[in-house]
Amino acid sequence: MTHLTHDPIDIQSLLALDQYPECGGLALFVGTVRNHHQGLPVVSLTYTAYPPLAIKRIADIEQQACQRFGLSYCRVVHRLGLLHIGDVAIACVARAGHRGQAFDACRYVVDEVKHQAPIWKEERYANGSSAYVQGCCIRPDAQPETCDGDHP
Amino acid sequence: MNLSFEFYGELIPLAGGERYTFRVAGMPATVAEALALLVDHCPALQPRLSRCAVVHDTEVLLRSDPLPDSGHLVLLPPVAGG
Image: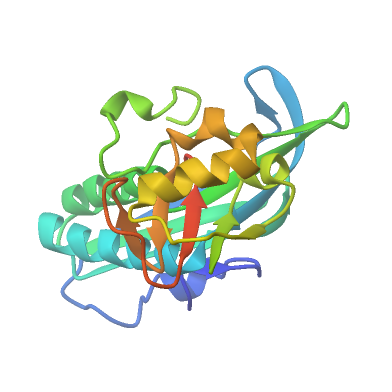
């Protein structure tokens, strides 16, 4: 399975339950489309990406997480295209010997993907308007404060 | 010689499309010089450029880096996945 997909994310296949018998902890994060943002009613989202760099960065983050947290397995898939309320936007699976590493890794990976992968979210609101969510600057010489508060 | 740019996210409506190409008499030496020429053609981009990453394929460039031989740059505004 690729790191970016226009198709619904198959969470079950991400779990890799038939592999990694040394793992006793599996953490799964699933991000879904919510119906509001900063007080505005959201009716849908469109995700777009710059795939060459997004795929590379997600793969690098997975690898870093495996080394940092001692994971046997880490996998992230992000959805692209038009999504409606309740649709799965991102799924992350981390598998480790114990639950602590798996939980910590899962949070780390999702945060890093949100802040480092070139993916953009355009929200459509109930009044017919739309706007891109302001996010994190990925210039290599950017200051840390260039990550906006509405994209935690 | 052509200088070409590729846009993503909120830059697309500001640039009037996903790509913009124009002819130059001589290729700029650095990424920063190329961006300055782009602003001459697309002034609406100027307020956003300071928070954009400039990329060639999968390499994120500094403003002081030499312009790639292809003369093609990808501009990535702040990201907001997840």
